[in-house]
Amino acid sequence: MIFDRVLDGLGQAIVDGTLATGHADSIDGFVRRTGASRSIVREATRVLVGLGLLSAGRRVGLRVLPREQWDLIDPRVVGWRLAGPDRDTALAELRALRRAVEPEAAAAAADRVASASHPPDALEALVATADRLTTAGADPAAFVRSDRELHRSLLALSGNAVFERLARVVERALDERAHLEPDPVDVDLHVRLVEAVVRGDAPAAAAAMRTIVDRT
Image (cartoon, rainbow, N blue to C red; front, side, top):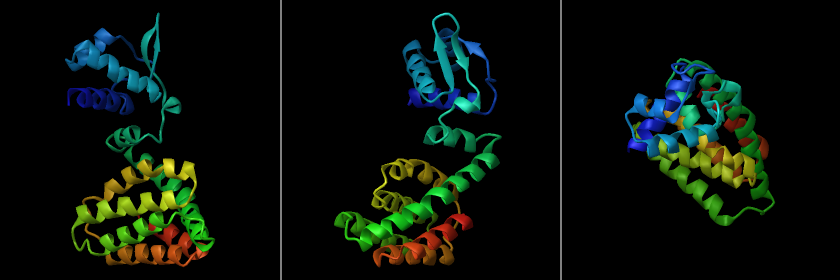
């Protein structure tokens, strides 16, 4: 879609520094830059303002904001950073975020199972996803697809709405492994993780998740 191309083009240009912090422009300027219609550019800049990449003012027009203002956990911003010169930093920050959140989410999910306070269908979804992951074989795409579902299901099972909100960021980080052939060790770790959650063993679930993140 033209809108996606314009949004990605402008977002990437800001994130990689082509449009430097403080750069001032206008809708017409971005129309000339992208070759898109005013309506599409206007909508794209509205999204970028919402993500903290641009500010908009009646007198100053559109201005590129510094990274401190960006919504760094929005999957689109994550993707632009991973595609730019900031990739290594972005990956390290994503790993640190996952290490802080996902073991806690795994422990919370196990605690909910132990106390029988979890939705039954949520646990069933987690187990079913683990089964699909183990049968992915050497297909990287199938493995990553099941891996994303497993982590999303686990975050939801934690019962923590903030953890669940981070699912899209975790999924975007996992997409970076889409070209890698599944490692049997990683498959086994995910199975151990789900088994720990099913039996309500919070320390074991947290430990398995921590190892999974550290191996990423």
